[in-house]
Amino acid sequence: MNYPQISVIILTHNSFRYLLESIESILEQTYNNIQLIISDDNSASFPAEALINRLTVKRTSNLEQIIVHETEYSRGKIQQLSEVFHRYCNGKYVMFMDAGDVFYSKTTLEELIRVFQKDSDNIDAVLSQVKLYDEWMLHFKRDSLTQEAIHAVQDNKAYNLVHNSPVLIRLPLASMIIKKDWLELNIEGLKSYKECASLALQLALLKEGMHIKYSNIISIKHQDEEFRKMLTQSEYKYHLFVRQEQISCIKTFLKSENLEINEEFSKIIQQHDDDVSKENIVLNKIKMFKRNTVSPKERWINLLKRHKDTLYQYSRKKYIVCALSCFVYILMINIAVYKLPLSYVHVLLGISLLLIFFITLSMFILYLIFKYRK
Image (cartoon, rainbow, N blue to C red; front, side):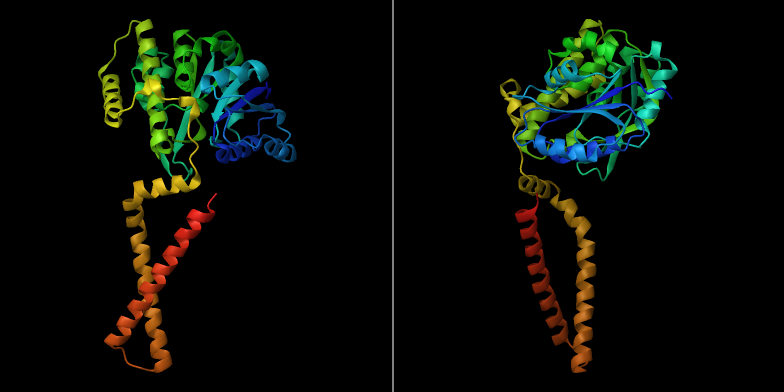
């Protein structure tokens, strides 16, 4: 197999804790000609030097070049993407990832490039399926592409794809590999937007009449943004800001192509307007480039508040089993040591000791979680 260089660009902002997982999955790829570019958008804390040292030690033979880039101030994903592309990108093909995205298998890049090489002259981008997971990448939530969207891409029908707008809005940036030649000609036209990089790229591809080839390869495991960004009020406001920009992006495309807004997209717009009204937010006044960094402790507290009922339901059975086991154990000790028959006194004694033990242990565990979790 011929191995043209592919530039894998990872965009980060206050997400270093997820970045290492993405890097590990790239190091494991069987594809032998990768340029790895890591760009941080002025995070509150980004240990660039430590990251470079780590990559130097763990570097594998499949990496031709490693670049770690930091912006001087927060610019938003589109500006960040454009700057890194123009300054560093050398590959024939380009793939963008968010920190936390991991390849589904070790052969993912090799399989996707093989799709390109089968009909390189007639393909400008390869779109693949992405599996969406929760913040800890433990529970699968849904596929990024529905069957309707897949058929629209296969038929190269822009109207059908855009009118499946919920799919476009949820589509991760890492779902596509794009030819560098096309990006060089069109990336400047994306700068009117700041954050919805994936959607802007896809609509630009459709508007320019570029051909997108769908591959049924599962390429990426992706942390679902909606789950992660609604844990705090400040992050939820930012989520609404991005959603408004996505809606504006699709409206602009529909107008330029003389396409009407369909019923499904109208529902999305109405739901968004209701959410904004309910939160009493003026989105155009949000200073989006000063996104708050949420501490691990705050994330845990918000998570427990939002999901306390669910957590209780899951834990209740375990607590009951534990309580019964301790109760039986205490009674067996009493019987063995004192050789006494069972009585109400022993039952009450066992329950009292169990409650004291359980309350003390729970308080100690919560103390450790909030004090030492990093």
